[in-house]
Length: 402
Image (cartoon, rainbow, N blue to C red; front, side, top):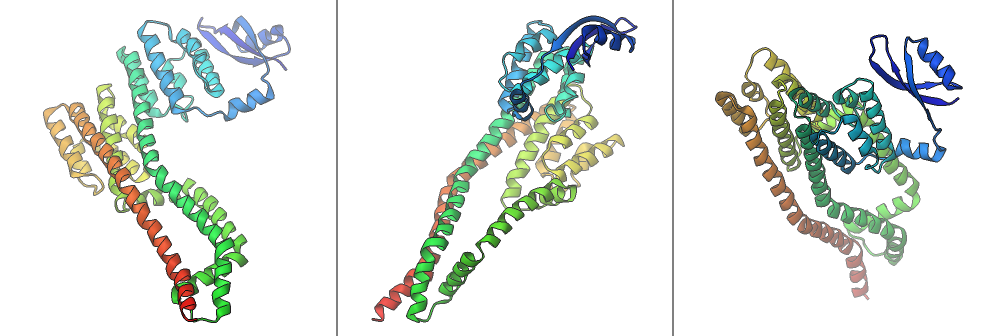
């Protein structure tokens, strides 16, 4: 049955837009009239090609797409272009078919009388509550273009931070995977031949060699079990982390790991200080700001801290005194907040704290990048040393005996 996109007037004279299924435009008009709507215009929505529909459904909306969307929408809104017209222009700028479809729906919703923030709220997986609240504040203050530009900057900064972390971890991840691949090939093709020689010679095997022989035999006879355990363990862990207890236990573990916890703490404090400064500048209350930050922190332990802090702030307590009771909150954070509360300029103080943590994160990433190479070399050296001690030395001793 054909699908029609319509524009209609409601009994109060307001414009309503949407889609309706009907065999003809006349039948579509009857459907609208049965809902007390007066049809203005119809536009038939052409059926999607099955392949195009599949690509649209599963296409990925990248951070780059969102940055371009907010940046260009900010420019158009700042140039006094109507939001609906701006969205129509942006449909031609994005590359993701799924994002094109969403922007088109946003334009239809705004044509129907909704605000931009109300339209964005329909897609929480793409536009979190933090984005919606900032846009709503921008609409209320008349600075929507600046808010949209800030969102583009923030998405870009988050993407750059993730890229830096991935870049620092890419090299060790590659080496570890390569180490496992080489180890598997050794167990399949090399070690069985070498261990059989040692066993046939009847020589007394060192403890390290006995472990290697036992591991080789187990791998050859029960390789299917090893593969099953690895794949099953991976899927099982992924499922467990999607559960509430699993996610909470994992997040609680990582915030107590040596070295890792210090790095993550700085990232969480960077997000906290940066967002709360901008939310407070946007006219959002401290309670609402804490609730929004809790939702985007990325760690459920810190999420609970900020949610509890929001509840206690409502009772009239000082934020600095509240955060002081949590051991995971660095003293610098609640001390700086205390200064901001005393001076009455908390956003400015939090912005300085944000700059401090931004530099700290950059320094840690640079240090990790420098230290990773020698650490990997030590790991490779240990692996080679174990192989030499377990296989080559017994062969050398056996050859020396003759």
